[in-house]
Image (cartoon, rainbow, N blue to C red; front, side, top):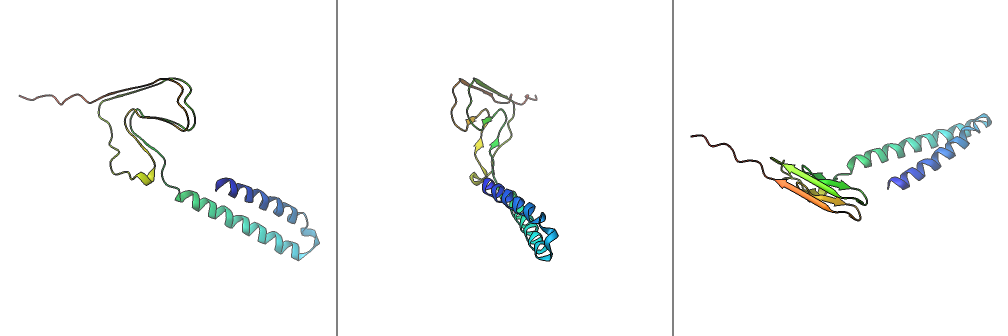
Length: 126
């Protein structure tokens, strides 16, 4: 969607530039240029509002690692102590990566080591 919107925006900018170069020829060119500028503004507003509707993204807990593409080397994730809960996050809002989770968009070519240690027990009071 973004690539298509960017392409249309570039085309509208080029057409607007060409129309602006012809403003000296009279009022029809002014009307055409105003229409193109208005169309460009409406498209930009629509794209901006649409981008705000995109929800999701991964929810990463403590020590989680995410790479958009490949992970070429080794990854070590350490998590010690209390970890915030990911409860209440719907699956529609993206993946939920728990403590020490490792996610790559494509390949992981190295070793992955995850060390999660639970929080220490509370002290006993006598």
